[in-house]
Amino acid sequence: MAESSVMEPAPAGYYEFFAGGGMVRAGLGEAWRCLFANDFDPAKAASYRANWGDAELRVGDIAGLTAGDLPGKAQLMWGSFPCQDLSLAGVGAGLGGKRSGTFHDFWGLARALANEGRAPRIVAVENVCGALTSHGGRDFEVICRTFVDAGYRCGALVINADRFLPQSRPRLFVIGIREDAVLDPDLTTVVADGPFHTPALRRAVERLPVALQDRMVWWRLPEPGRSNASLASVIEPEPSDVRWHSAGETSRLLTLMSPRNLAKVEAARRTGERCVGGLYRRTRRHAAGGPVQRAEVRFDVAGCLRTPGGGSSRQTLLVVADGQVRSRLMSARETARPSSMRASYRSMQTFAWGTCAMRAGHGPTRASSPFAFAAFAFVLAAFALAFAFAAFAFAAFAFAAFALAFAFAAFVLAAFVLAAFALAAFVLAAFTLSSPCSRTGARALVADSEEQATRHTQTPST
Image (cartoon, rainbow, N blue to C red; front, side):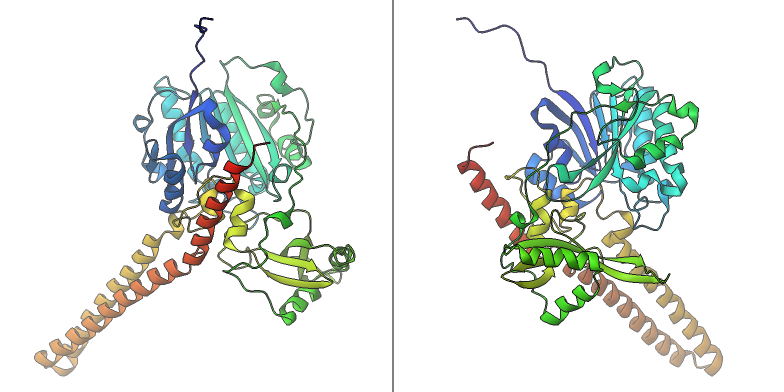
């Protein structure tokens, strides 16, 4: 039989900004073709290269890009822009902040493409749900109005990762389609309906000006089934890069729990099975009216996984087994597992920010770059120079002994310059060594990806 002469359509092209380790690329699969990818952080770029190569990748600040840097004409332009200024845990700078403000740089490129007749058919952005309420909802209005003013019909969705993975991670997606593009009516609904139109999203849309609401759509997506993966399935029995807490430390965590959370622990103990819960410390309001620190636990899924480097955002695990309750921090390997999109994904040693390299666009940015630390140290060096010359002038004036004054000033100058360079070296070393993914953690991530890849090749896909 002769082969069919019908050719398969070419994969649609897309641009991926704030690309991280390439999770958008992994999700789109082979039906789409990446034309250009960009991220600011070298650690994320290393993970991207390890999995996708660097033919399409450009490492650098999005503000330094022009439309001329973007090849061809893309059907989709994706931007998972940084969340720090929009997050509920952030300082509230919103879209005016240095990090989340890169949203405007992203749209500057989109408008430049439109001016060249290369406007993408679809533009999509992703961020935390705090964007819905940031600045009283004004930042969400700016996001939606930017789409509409650029000639796109847009709508928003809130999708939680717990439908696919043992991790609670709700995220806001705003998706726009060019007004001149044909839209399948089955993709929209007249009113908000379904699990992806959450109450918070509906309230945010209701707060928008009526004229803006009229230009928006409610996207309709098929509802996926719930994942049956458990948090316990990704936890190591004895990780090498974290220690178990002492009995006293675990007892302290339990004393921070409310009666409701203590009841969860007791219910887990009564099952007689090994139960693993994710625990966070939260500041809540006490019944008496003041703030109180609480430890809250979930035994179904992990909370939103952040950097495994430590601090208040790092997740603690509570393991209940054989009638005992033990606790420890989550290891680097455990942090990466619930975030992996495929078993063969390689988490390289340069994956220095744990889950941040897996995520798109939410890791270290300009403000947390090592270059910022170096700049700070050299500013100190400049002050040291100024101080040394001031000392020279003072000595010359006070003693009228220019030879002695010069020697004294030279000594002060040398001492302060050496101190400044020593400080710079110390700060940069501390930055590197305190990286969340130490060499031990990095080796664990690499070993885990190789182990999963081996299992993947031996187990039929389901």
